[in-house]
Image (cartoon, rainbow, N blue to C red; front, side, top):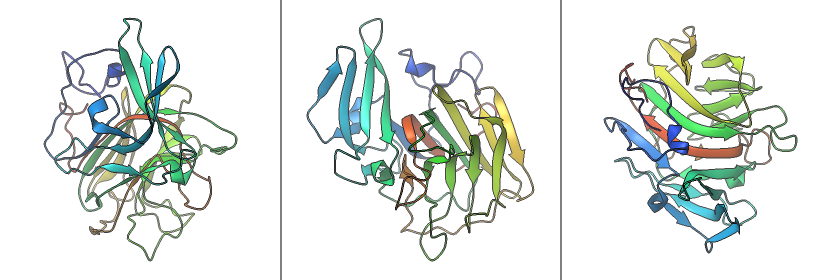
Length: 275
C-alpha cells in the first residue's frame, strides 16, 4: 500500500504492485502489517523454485509482522497440500515484484496470528489488498473472509466473531456475529465485488457511531443502525486467521485467491491519513 501523491487519501493504493516506489506508511496505532512485497519478512518451508522463467513460487511458513506488535502469522497446517504459496512475477524491467500470498480455499491453508488483537473495543482502520477469485468448488456463493475469527460455533469460545471479507459477492464487514443469520452489527456494500482483479478492501469502525466500507474511489457504504457495533472485550486467547475459511470443518467460506498486504490500526484515519 502506498500513499497517493501529491495529495493523500484513497487512490492508487496498490500501485506498488506494479512500481517500485518508496513507502509512506503511518505507524501511529499500527497493530498489524503483513507485507508480501517485503521478502525479508517471509519464512519459507520448502526450497526455492520456479515453475517457469517469470514466476517465483514457494510455500509459506510464516509472515513476520512489521508493526510494533510483532504479531506474526504462522501456517495452520504443515502439509504442502494446504500451505499458502508465495508468488512473485517478473516485471518488464527484469525485476521481480507483484508479490502475494495465494490461499487455496481451505481453513487449513490460512495463517493464524500469534497474538490476540485488541480491536473489539476500539475504533479501527483495516486495509487489505487482495485478488478475489470466484471458484465453483471453493467459494460458489462468493462467501469468504480475508481476515477474521468467526466460524461455528459463535459462542462459548475466545472468538470476537469479526470478519473482513465478502458475502454473497458483496464486500462485507461483520462485527460480533452471534448466529448464522445474525447480521445486526454489520455493513454490506451495494456494489458487487469485482473478481479476477486486484482490489483495495478498506473496513472502518467508528465506535459509537457507524461501520463503514471504502473502495479505491472513497466511501462506498456506511451503516449507522448498530452505532458501530457492541464493544467486545479483549481476550488474550483470541486469534484472527488470514486467508482461512469461515468454518474449520469444510470449505464453506474459504478464501481462494491472493493477498498482498494487510494493515490494521486501532484508530480511525482522517481523510489525510487514509492510504
